[in-house]
Image (tube, rainbow, N blue to C red; front, side, top):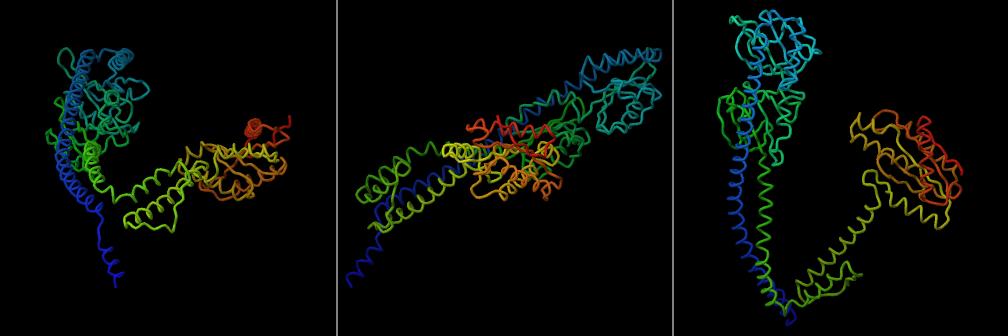
Length: 530
């Protein structure tokens, strides 16, 4: 009966360390949590407002830049139109010479065209476009001719070149005020153009933001992803506001369903619009960094409070001190954890078990790291470190062996044609063939890219040749990830008949490999004996 009572009393007791640590930790955690929540909410809104303001400022600056650019382009075309006021008496060579000078001088347009009042293309620069002497076919050009006033088209695709283009035109009148056609500058939207030159390296990207320019109909005129230029994004909330002639900034959901912080500004000179957007994740990333900084500031007082608690619990914390001493030895010397040792303190016992479990896991992870340091992560073969260690060990032991240098033929074209992922699958496929073709004592390594090395122990050069040929034939005839024949070139050198130096041996095998390459690939060559 007394024993049972003692056990019952002991099980009901809670240590002083638990009481003090629990109370302090609870109060600190609650206080910190309240502060962090308040800080998080206020900082979040501040960051959103700041990001929107910065994006709006960037959009305004770009809008002004575009406005100035359009004015300059129109001014250039107006001046050029005055040059061609007597176009009806100019010959083709004169017109082309002036067009070429205009295009090369201002560098605003990819091409410049002069069209007379009948719709005939009198001349075009550069001449390679080849439309001189033909009549206009695009709706944009027909509209420009019919309007008889300055005109900026929406994006359109040229029938002859399939280029996505934008036309800016100015009418040509002679000295008597008679309409003689127009001069038009064309921008190829998906090629190098004036927009790419000005906005191609916009600094908004450094802030995690991106931007785009849209025309009056909601089609993209400029985007970093040139494949999207010309895309209709008029359903985007920000673009809808631009089409309506509005400017501003707000949180919106883009066409991909992502929440972004968007600022949008109308270009005064025309109906274009500029939008600068930042993913909301930018705000949350900054919030994470701010929270971490706040926690670092809170850490010193928290530690001070914990030291007070530790001082009060010092007498009952001796088992924990012992455990701490034990932990301090981990990593510096061999530590043995007794399985049978029991602590009278419940917390000490639990911590001992946890430490034993953690130490076991750390040892496993250390062993795994050592293995990873010697292994190629893609193919599972050993790496150059293992290769060099094995060669030096075998040479010290004077163990006869052959080295086979392997290089997959035309591997770069595989990556270029099928992609790097398929290239990786080819490397893994080849590694499996090598592994399945060797004995347990042989060593297979991947030394970089498509280069592999095999060390065949206790094998002469002619014996290693048979191994290499078996691997080469298997690779050539087996089904592979790309469904096209794969070949390999190989070079062989033998220790000690070719050399007693590891470096020289590898060099000779490498020379033999390149001899195989030069001789037409897909073959094995044994190094010449010096």
